[in-house]
Length: 108
Image (cartoon, rainbow, N blue to C red; front, side):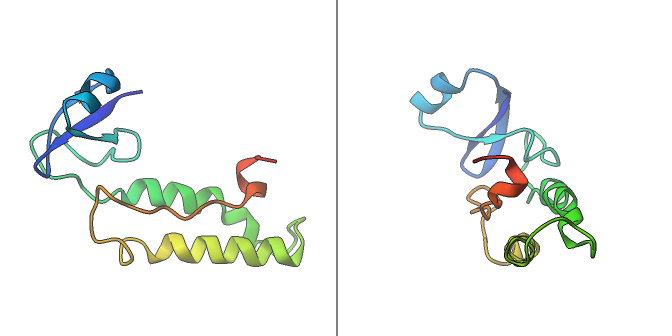
C-alpha cells in the first residue's frame, strides 16, 4: 500500500515503507483515499473517495431492495453522514469517516 508523506501540511512524497515514515514523525495518508492530491501541495479533501462510498450504497435506497426497514434506515443515516462531509471535518487529513453498516461491508 502506498501512502503520501505529509509534513507541515504539505505532501512531500510517496512511499510504501510506512514503518520508517512513522518512526521519523511524519504523517501519512492513503494514496487511494487521497487520489486527488499531489506531491508539493496540501492534501485535497477526498471527494472522489466519498462519492465512491455513496455509490456503493446506492442500492440500499431502491424501493424493491431486500433489506429490513431498520437496515434501510441505518443505510440512510450512513449516507447522510457521508453527504455531510466535509462540513463536519475541517481538516482534509483528519477525517472521521462514518462507519458503514455491516450489511454493506460483509462483516459479521
